Image (tube, rainbow, N blue to C red):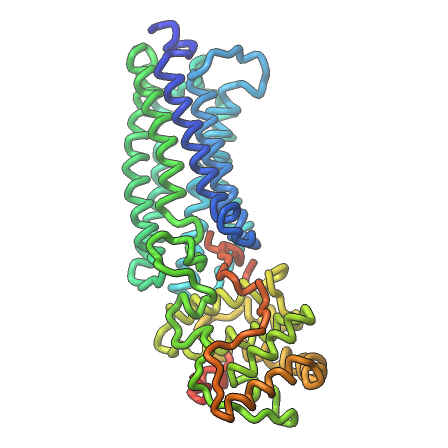
Length: 466
């Protein structure tokens, strides 16, 4: 017992390492499952790299405990095996500190988007390094002072500030969560977040207790073995629960991935419960199309819009029409329902506005920056200027070609059949873009970016046909 307690290799050590490996495998499966099984398109910006960094931080955290606390027998003959590399830098700034900073950055995003109703003033790729500065400063100070003994343990006086730093970040996370507790989230973000915080805080309490016992009583063999076993086990459960229970993307709109959802939603409008979202209503009256009518007026008719969208998609230029339709859905949400309007606005920004978005629209840099800098994500005119620019492009390009296309001819034939009382039970024949097969809003919350940073009042008017 005394030998393996000092040099590692106790049976309990191997059991703890095996559990840690198993938890990392589960974590990786959990994080990649939507992409491998459901073929969800990879998110852009911080919606992708924040959860990815969280997985890396979890791996660093577990590996640093194994390397620094003598779980395995090995000779520390190289500088990269030293205590200060693993117990100070990897376990601190690159492990627990990075893990907590990811979660704080995500809740910070939720706070600004839903409480302040604007995109966060500090982008995620800046906020995250800033939140790590206290950990880096603490690690640098310890590295200079070199208080670690040959067992990689700190002295009693050093434990207090180290544990205080761990507790500070947990407190900041709880504080941000408390600031958004009054928001009635549509997809249970706050409930999931609180579950993650409570479970994680309990595990962190056990982990800190084991950490203190392991650092202080390094002369008691059985206590060393037991405490480091608990240290790695609780850390293994912590990283898994922290990622799994507490949502990895607060602005997640991939509703079909939630087990408790009975159906798969094709659009964000359906996920938000917007009336008639994505539906072709058979009771909708036939429309006599006059090419001389303004295009924006014609697009208010859903059947014409679907036909025009199918044509635009066939030309690989359907982004503008999809954008119009999503704004049409946004306009159906009442002004006094800010939460759903924020969800929809954020979805539109991530899907159409941010650079490199899946369906990025062609608008001027000035208009794009105006949207990013908005102080109210619920404002009815948030996307008005962008829509005006796109309407000009569609009128001069797509619309002119559409009138002579087979799509328009087919639309007129079907409209004629409906007007003669031969309404078709289902609209068929339109090969809509596969880009509508899922709803995926990247968050600069875990979306998080400004998930890259980030309505038309006419579209909001009740003049829209339902």
